[in-house]
Every structure is written in C-alpha cells, then in structure tokens.
Image: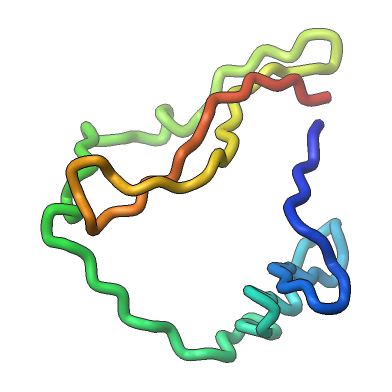
Length: 114
C-alpha cells in the first residue's frame, strides 16, 4: 500500500492535519486546515463561508438509479493481494468554457494492496 505526503510539518509552514485518538477506531480529535484548528472533538470551531455556484454547475452529474449491488466491488484476492483502481489527485485547472468552475484533475492509478 502507498502513502502520499504533501508538504511538511515545520515552523513557518501551513499544515492540514487530522489528529486521531488511535488508528484502530480512528476517532477524529482535531482537524487543522491551513494551519488553523477548524474542528475539535466532533464540533466545528469556525464558521463556514457560503459558497455560491453558477446555476450551470447544479444537476450536472447524471446517474441512473443505484442499488446496493452497485456499491459491492468484485475484487478477487490472489496470493493475499487485491488489485484496485485508485484516483490520484493531480491538481486544479479552470474549466475551458467557464470562468466559474475549478476542475480537480485526477489520474487513474492501478495498485496492489496486501
């Protein structure tokens, strides 16, 4: 399995951190975004800015009705490993035909997990 790290934790750096009580039950104790505590013990500690989107951005994803079987992956385990698709973040760009929408760029990564 891979771990991705972006940035550094050091004096003068701005960090995004998620602090958990332990790795077994993964209860989030504190969330730090851009160097500021934004949530603590399950409670938001800052106000959220209202974000307006161009009306063209709404109802832009069209899906057929999903059922529980659509959520069940078919991943055969071979010799203790399973091969999965993962989406890697590759950055942001502006939509070519729009000045209102930032597009998250992603790339497909095929990986084996043990």
